[in-house]
Image 1 (cartoon, rainbow, N blue to C red):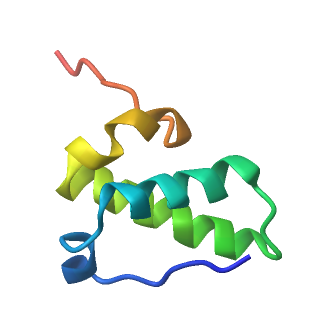
Image 2: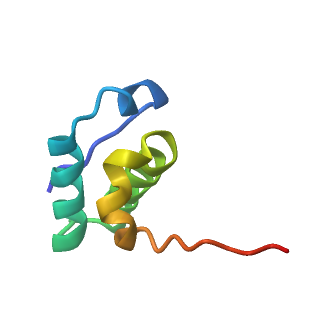
Length: 70
């Protein structure tokens, strides 16, 4: 399985299809190394922060929850 390496600038060029492919890899979880999975997870997390409209359908893969700090 191939993973992506990324930079902050790369996130701005990703398409919905790129993010869907990334999410599919994470769902299949057939990585040769746990570190490859972690790279994809960090990429999805970066997308969620920088372009949340692309990552919103895949938030369940990130286990991100809203916290009430009040």
